[in-house]
Image (cartoon, rainbow, N blue to C red):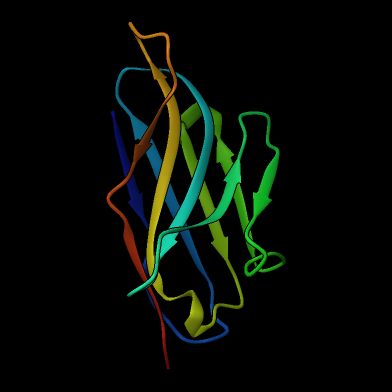
Length: 120
C-alpha cells in the first residue's frame, strides 16, 4: 500500500493551496483518512480527518479556513487550504486507515509528506 501526497509548495500569506493524497495497492476497505502536519521543532498534529461516510473534524486553528474532502472511488483525500498564514508552514502528511486484502484488521498508513511554506 502506498499513499502519495502532492500539492505542497510556497505560497504568500492569505493565499491558497490544495493538497491531494491517493492511496493505492491491495486495498479492501478505507476507513478514516486525514491530514496531519509537523512544523520545525514541534510534534506532529492533526489538521483534519474525514470518515468513510463524510463526517469531518478539524483542528481549531484551521476551522473555517481548511476543508477536507474525499473521493471514495479513487481512494483519494483532499485538503483545500485558504487564508494561509506563516503558522501553517509545515510538512503535511496524509494518513489512511485501511484494510488490505487477506487481512482482517485496519492499519494506519502514512504518506511521505509534502512541504507547505507560507511566506512573503
